[in-house]
Length: 508
Image (cartoon, rainbow, N blue to C red):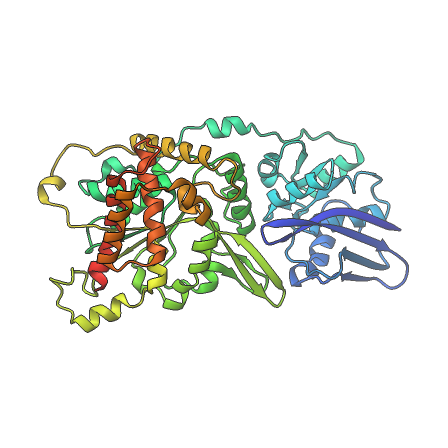
């Protein structure tokens, strides 16, 4: 007898429908799985057989053919265990149900018959809704994650017997529901607060501007000045995720398998800090079948690269396209995948190999130049804000007065972002000033003649590139937004120019 079960598989950060066809026939006992299964899928025959036996079912005898359609796409992972087992039960007439094609079914089986959590349930649920399915049948641990998709009946099951009884109508399982409004209403209480940082008011100002406009920033200073401390507190002043951003971010974390247990939706912006030994595949994504890397996991959040010159140069150079386009395309023999990567890059570095400023360093000029030369000019040009992080004077370290809290800074950042959202309401793909294109600059960054002349003089004196000109305009636009000004004034441009001058002082 032939049975068909609806399931889904992952391709990039999205899912596509899979039809599991199970045919139980006569002849010698043999189980054949076709449809380009990987090793994990092929091994499912043993897991399914044992799980069925331990759940009180009989594994059918004779020749069994299991086809995963479409047959020309490679299938990966253990998520087909549950649909294969249910297909076998239906094909061998151990259960009678007409619901197998109404639900998208995924889940890994334990040998006891229990259903284990799998990766990528949120994309599967979104695909099921797009395909017009009545609902999804998923592991109980993944039910909350799937339930954020509105208009879909989400059934979480704990074991194979429970799944079979539900499909036959023997038992009722309450559908899992999630109150999205309640999730977003939760207060964002951050353990890391800017109030804990002593001094460094100029750096805090630079990070506030970066957060307000979504700009990349480079912190340059000796060890122990608080570069990492400041960077780790940046998420505490970023605006909350929107529902669309939360869904995109949660999808990526679900696919990678790092979504916290029992959490339906991510509402905090991610903060990723890979070690400087990370490979280009670890940063961008890769493997035989491409999966998201660190820059995609940091989507809508912060990617912090500490000790920037210590990263391999070829790894740093791979960041240029994602920084410019907000996505990364990875090509492998199995095909090409495009992953989103709209992140804020925050980098920190010492000004010399021994950590001191060039005027105080014991390193030779050649050693300093070789150290700084690990970072290319094109990459530096893609970082909007360069700021020096000086040593904190003792009187500020010993002061009992707390600094300005992250909550107050976030209020100003959110107000500036709201102005940008109204400005770019009709521009697809542009959500903040850092994402403005050439056409947006001409429209929203018009300078008066005397301001333009001053900017021209500053660029000539500092020998800044054409890309640096665009960066200055974007940062100036953000500073004006923080001041709630429609026009970019001279003081906004001059402050923006200062954030491009430090790298010239150090690199020359």
